[in-house]
Length: 256
Image (cartoon, rainbow, N blue to C red; front, side):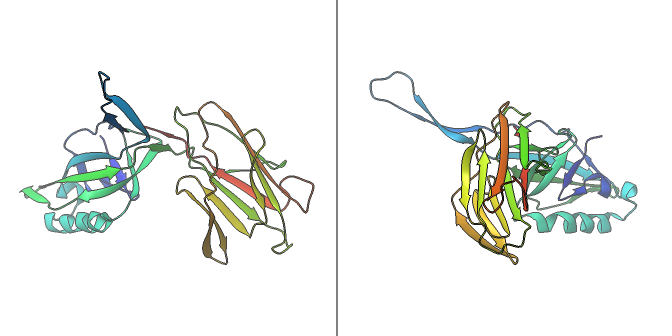
């Protein structure tokens, strides 16, 4: 039996069933075509990105399985899905085990009573292009030597999230240097207690006393497939790599 989870709640927990099996939907490369004077055939302009994917799920609910009346079950489903139509939430299904994506519920306008014991509805979603692995969503912390070593197991480059947290007592006058991929210096300068380079959100910011402040357009390099990716950070006030400085990377392995 196929099932899906939306915002960590499953269809089956409401006695729901899919009327049609889910399909593998694949994101389309964002591209356009241009006519060049005197040239037969169009020129392909690759925008180096992928479009969102739209998909539908036709589902039914059986009150006797949920052990509720048809009316109370309809209200329960409405209370689950109706508030989730304004932003992305985590979506999982049994077709893609060990992976998740982010989807917006774009249409949920009616529940039909086909029979006293059968309710049906159609859900329409708009999801981001990639599926993210559960393994890649786990943060990887530095070793005793201050290094994080990664290798991308997927066929597509990932956008990591790098977090630097100072745990010492030197105040705000310490100096940090971050190296990524073959000793490329990415960050050099004073940092506050917590600094994040977010490749997914395209943001570089610090968090100090719960206040988020944007710092620059600096982003971590993407992690290419089958490429050795090493990262370490050190403080200028110490000679040892990683002392009083926690380095964590969430690699975000992904596939179409």
